[in-house]
Length: 65
Image 1 (cartoon, one colour):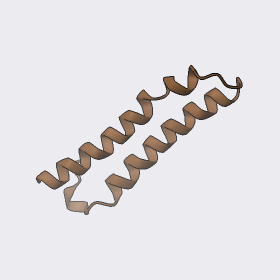
Image 2 (cartoon, rainbow, N blue to C red):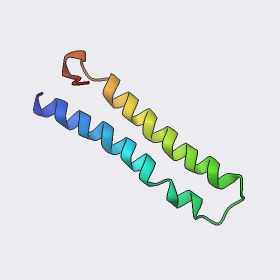
Image 3 (cartoon, rainbow, N blue to C red):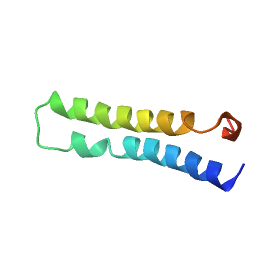
Image 4 (cartoon, one colour):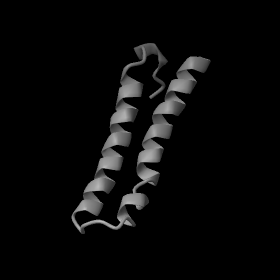
């Protein structure tokens, strides 16, 4: 795997990881009971969308999985 492919993979996984790790922030916020889970889900969806976009916008030969 080339250096550029590793960087793109790291960027994809970092975005997904940040989306998952930051779930706690909206859950601890002073907000409506329904707003907190919705915000937490939005963090995960954003992280997953970022992962998908980065992984699937790279050339096919650079994917290791």
